[in-house]
Length: 161
Image 1 (cartoon, helix red, strand yellow):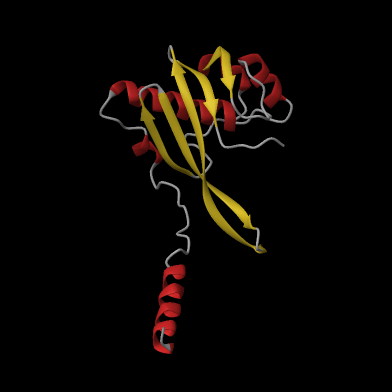
Image 2: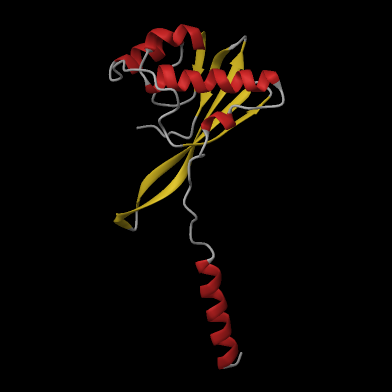
């Protein structure tokens, strides 16, 4: 390989690395648009999960858990116990009730619904492991299974703490 070919390969390699630079994750500008669906059942499931997130999870109105969660609610996050009662007891230790907001406070990117599953996608900001003074964004997903008009199961990418 000639010196010119080596230099060209190096430049092309550097250019392709630059193309790997992250595009920051951004929240949706209008959350209410995310609730829409041509399928009324999917729109209903999206609204159920959206309202649960606002009212119970974010506002800490744990007395409303019965409205949203089945009694035998299954939790796949390894840090949170299974069951509606266990959910309420767990979050009751550190979530204090506050007013319910009209929209989800967390930076919501998308709401996806298919069949009886609904996924909320959020912007997650993290410290750069190579330079703690810098931040980057990634996406966090919470998936819910709906059964009989209530949330019956939850998944997220949380790791055991």
